[in-house]
Every structure is written in structure tokens, then in C-alpha cells.
Amino acid sequence: MVEISEPLALATGSRLRDALESDILTGVIAPGERLDEVSLAHRFQVSRTPIREALLQLASAGLIEIRHRRGAVVRDLGPQQIVAMFEVMAGLEGLAARLAAQRHGPEEAAELLACHEGCLAALGSGDTDAYYYANERFHQIIYRASHNLFLNEQCLALSRRLRPYRRLQLRAGDRAKTSFAEHGAVVDAILRGDGEQADHALRNHVAIQGQRFTDFIKALGGLSERRYQPAAE
Image (cartoon, rainbow, N blue to C red):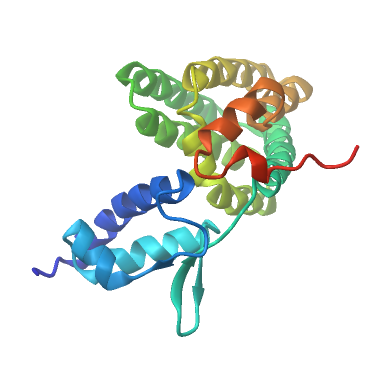
């Protein structure tokens, strides 16, 4: 097997991460299953360097645990825990949007508009992953425009944990198209300086509720609906 250079290995690692994410979330790789570096390197016809990088990224997202002497093992996360994380993410991003509406400068406004156009181009391509990456940049611009370093760090940290699920939910129905329309409301509120509306728009955009909850549970695939038990009122 030919060894690849480190920069290429890192790029390949990101592609492998996406493939393994999909396998884990759709149940192809089951909770509790061990991810063996040698077997994965053989499967994807790469060296073990990008495999290690992909596993580290999956561990950072909370999808796997790297255990002493056992290696990488797929975690068993139920939908209830995932939805709870989305609830917290919605609150954090709503606050970021509120502050961004009050504090953004001309360069950040231009960057947000350009990224919104980039999301439209990605949507037109029909590639939900391409839309996800443009969408990720859109949200990160808002974090930075809040001009609150601690909030930015917290948003980025939880966003990394939710990254696999945010990618997955965009594959459900017309979610990507709806997501773009919701972005428009967020952009409008931020550029008008309406912090309350920006908070409301982004909070609702991120939160999983109502029909979106049903679609999300279906999209989880391998995480069966019967594993979700609604919390007591």
C-alpha cells in the first residue's frame, strides 16, 4: 500500500469521516462495534494515517469513543440525547444572532450576504453535503459577528458535536430548501439590527420540533424510533 503525504492524508481523513459518519448514523456500523484501523484501511484502500485522522474527528463529534486497549468503539446515543443537544444549540445560536444584529460591521454584513448566496448555489446543485458545508460557514459567520469570543467558542464546540446530525437532517424531505428560506429571515433580521427577531429566527431554525422532529427521527435510520422515549411532561 502506498503511503500518502500528510496534507493529502488530512484531506482524505475528512472524506473518510463523512463516509463513516453516514455508516454509523444509518446503522451500517452498529453501536458498540469496534472500528479497526487495519480493516478500514483495507476497505477504503488508504494508509492508516487518514483513518486515524477520521477516527479522531469522529471522537471529537462524540460518535465514537477511543478506549484503552480496545481502540475506537461506536457510541450508543439515543435520539432523546441528540434532541437535547439541539435545544441547547438553538439557545446559543439565538444569542449569537441577537448579538450579531447589534454588533456586526460592514465587512461581516458583506460576508454574510456572500455566504447566503453561496448557500443558494449549493442548494441549486442538489448536493445536500455541499449545502451543509456552505450552511456551516453561514452559521460560523454569525458566531464571529457576535463579537463574544466565549460564545463563539461554545457554539463551535457544540456545533462539532452536532455536525453529523445536522448533515443528516438536511437529507430529509425538502429540509435543505426550507433551511435556506429560514436563513433569509435570519439575514434580514441581522442586517436590520433587530436582535430580538434575529434571536427568534435562528433559534427556530436550529431547534428540532414538530414535524421536523418526526422527519429527523426517520432520517436517523439505524437509530430506531423505538429507542426514543419522550420525556415526562
